[in-house]
Structures are given as C-alpha cells and as structure tokens.
Length: 249
Image (cartoon, rainbow, N blue to C red):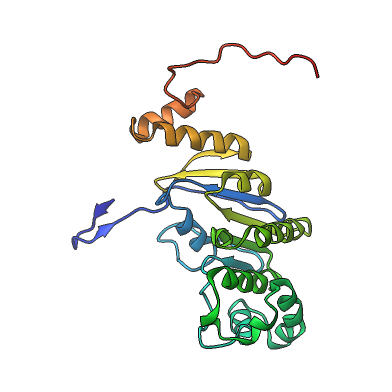
C-alpha cells in the first residue's frame, strides 16, 4: 500500500505472479480476505486489465464471480437465461436450443416464470450456475458463488464441474471451504498480500494455509516466508508428536 504523486492510495493487489493453466487443470486459490484471490480471478476473466504484465486466454473463459451479473430483477427467470446467455457470448439460436436443459438443471420449475426479484439468493445461484455451465466454456472461473446454495445443489454443481473437467475444461476455483478445494482441485495456490506463498498439491497447500493462519499474528511476512522455506510445521511447539505407530489392520 502506498500513495502516488497525487496522494491517491494505491494497493498492489497482485505482486509478481505467474500462472499457466492447461486444458483439464483444476486450480484452487486459497488465502485470507484481501489476499488478492478475487482480483486475480477478475484479471483472468478479463474484467480488470492488468496494470502490468499480460493475460493470454485461448478459448472462451466463463466467470461465475457475481450471481447478479447480467441479471435483471424485473425480468423472469426464463428471460434472464437469454440476458445472461448473451452476456456470456452465446447466440440466440444456442440459447433457444439450451433453454430447457438449463431450466431442468436449475430444478426451479414454475419459478422460472416469476420475476427474479422474487428469488432467494440460493435460487439465483441455481440459475446463474446453470446458464454459465451451459455456455460451453474452455475455462470456468468460480469465486465462492456456490457457497450461497444449499448442500444438495452444491453437490450437483460439483458433479457437473467434475464432468466438465473430464471433457478437457479448465477450472479456477476460489473457496474458503478447504475440503472442497481438496476434493475438486488437483493443484492449489496460497496467496498472501498478492503473492504466491505456497503452491502444489491441495493437501500441502492447505497445510501451509493453516500454518499461515497460526503464525500470522506473531510474525512479519518476511519471517513467514523464511519459515516456509525451512519446512517448519505450524503451531506454537508447546506440544510435539515424536512417535506414531499403527497397530493391526
């Protein structure tokens, strides 16, 4: 955080970060609030232009960052299928062909003929996700949006995302639900103050995040990075496990 020559406060939300995402990759982004996760997703989705560096996207990238994006409260659910679909790059013919599939996936039934203003937040997520996943993206960018939905629909979305991955689609997934990151993703990044602190398989990165949370209030960022490099475990070291045995089957 600094001030420019005009006295305007400038925040470096992403700092010296490089990511390469291939077809079929499932990348999880974790970190505390303000770490730069949402900013990174918006840069990747083309919503924010980077102030330096480049973003190269081959194929259609569909973001599910804001369930209100491309939705009109006064229009019905079916009308919003067309509005959001057009915003995501679908043609009218494509939208007409897929409307019933989208409607079936939402399981909203007659509610699709009611104005969006009558929908709960969970119903909005159902509609927004169904439209987005039917837009045939090459990459799907999701930012905590699914956390609003009920457990049943979350599982339905996860199953569809896994199916999307199996067909070669790439996924970037941000969530504070660390178990979802472990289940859904095959690699992960831990961001802190806009920089990558840890990267690799989800289990290892989640352990690094727990360490970061445990030591955040005690150490500066410099000493945190030194601890990571030395491979220290998280905790206060008041109790140490020195031996573990597994007996019988």
